[in-house]
Image 1 (cartoon, rainbow, N blue to C red):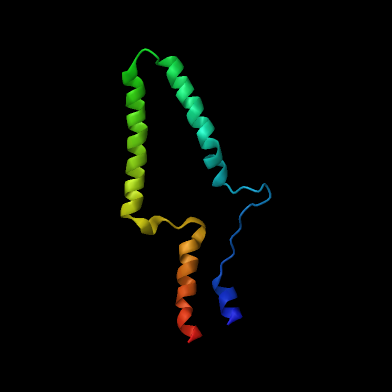
Image 2 (cartoon, one colour):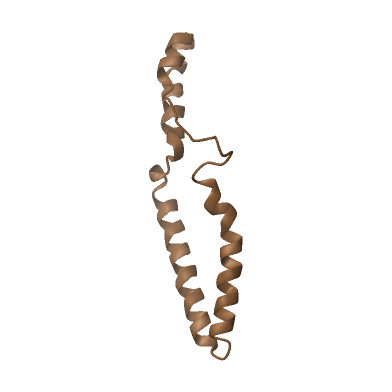
Length: 97
């Protein structure tokens, strides 16, 4: 049985030499980028609220649309091939009986 489990698991090559994956570092940098963007917006458009509100609405709308499409099509989420691996192991379950 161990042979089947070893064959079903594909090799996942992640660069762990830096301690962070390529997906994690943008998430860590995001709060700093947001603060810098907010400071820049405040300095350049301090007298007009419309420009700042319009940019916020555009960014928020983009985020909501992205999340809505993900919720409507959850099968598109397969980060690091995890769902595929889970399905492969679930197919092996009848062999245990």
